[in-house]
Length: 237
Image (tube, rainbow, N blue to C red; front, side, top):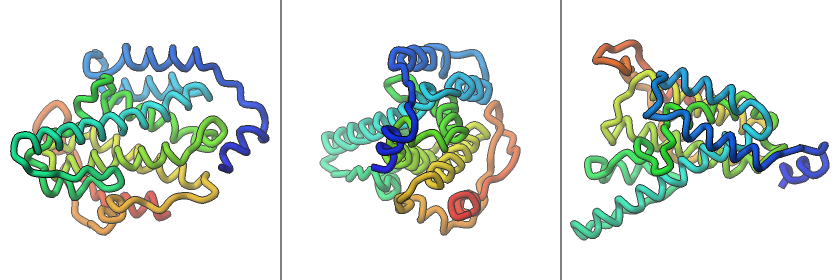
């Protein structure tokens, strides 16, 4: 509860819930798959929009909402698989990889169609960067523990989608993963008692293979990504 003590005793933090709702409404309505801007431009604009304490609250909430909705979607998919086939699928939030290893072809990547309209490469990527840029302020406006837990869920879901869910690894997707890793590291560094890295992240850290990264607009390979090495460099530094 160190974050709460700092919130109450470390200087008054002025937050405006009405403004937070306005910011969230703007982020939902102005950005996403329907917007004409490219995803990197959208994400950067969202990061700038959420650049104060109220924006930080909204940004953390967007990441948590995306993780919660993705989890609910996977639970629904598991129930549908059971209804159709009698096959039981276990959905564990701390580690989605066993689920995807077992049933990847039967599952739809949940982050690609969140019911709220949040897009992983627009609103979520922008929100993650907004928190990362002001990680030292996070515990002054909210509890960082739930945020960092949900952030690693989004990282787990994104990379499991690459490996098991037929999610194309393009520069937008790779950028999201880089931002998730960087923000996770920065938030953990601010915590008095940071949690242990989740099993999915520790498993991926043991990998050392390179993944081709594609141009979002076509079939051209524009780079490569060593996920295990980047996780180790970022989270174990």
